[in-house]
Length: 397
Image (cartoon, rainbow, N blue to C red; front, top):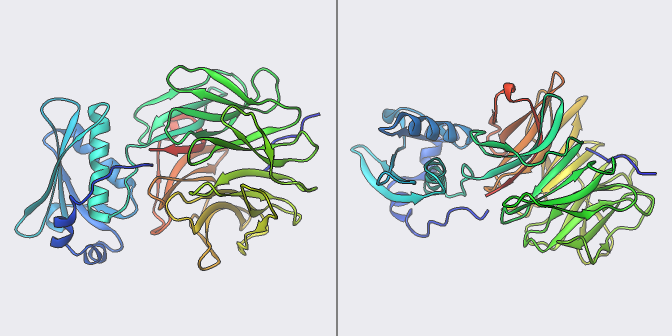
């Protein structure tokens, strides 16, 4: 008898093009003037471009969109040559001096504008942008849950599956060509499948007796970590991308779940109820003794995700104050920091800058995808409630 499911990039490379910009403006001073954020003004001769860019920058917790008189940087984005490329210019100073001019290509003009906005983030904040990335998530409309894919602004959303069955946990391959997800399709029990985005072809990865869930690609895309319960209790396993050559990592009487890879692919973080309630552990992908991560913030910690940029940080869901909130553990300080509050917040997933996370907000029986800046605490919604329920997001650039 099967067990129920347990517990809750590369970006644009700019090279040296920002050197002149940084020489003109002291970034630290610009941030102080913006009360912890860099103040920018955004303009375009095209109203749709202006609206799109301002909405994108409005999601970033390190940026404040303001008027030219109050801005540290002035950003202008125009269509380049009437095609699917955007011309972005960034200037600073009084009087204004143009410091950066670049033509940014995209798969279409909207994508080019978002990539141009990512270029601005890297030029002004010296960190990766994430606006042109993609989401995969579980969407529920008219009572039916399916896997959806979307741009970050929810302007291009499409269903990827038509299983008409319970689906959970979509996870991107690093190159964005495939997804792993758990589905109750066909058998009525949780099995792991992969799906090719170009062809729509599904491939079974793990359909063993028991629970098969939590599939996650390694950073190099060559391995899959997963949770299987065929031996009785849920344990962590690793396989190749076809679900073959399976190797067991954990062996104990407790239940393990939600494996997630370190950025270098050498370790996994996961949830275990070995202490009685779920807590976070890490283990080498070569095996060995698991190590408990001393989060010291809650008696219930689950759904860990390793920061793709800073290997010292892990985000997770913690039971706090009668609900769930997102927290970040730092291996350097050995401390955890709560970064959300209010309505229950679960299912964190890092964006490509290693600073922001997308998460699921639960309120009034509905679920909604949100973004939070782990540094400033700024929270923003990614879609309107009218879309329907959305949860379990995964991000790829």
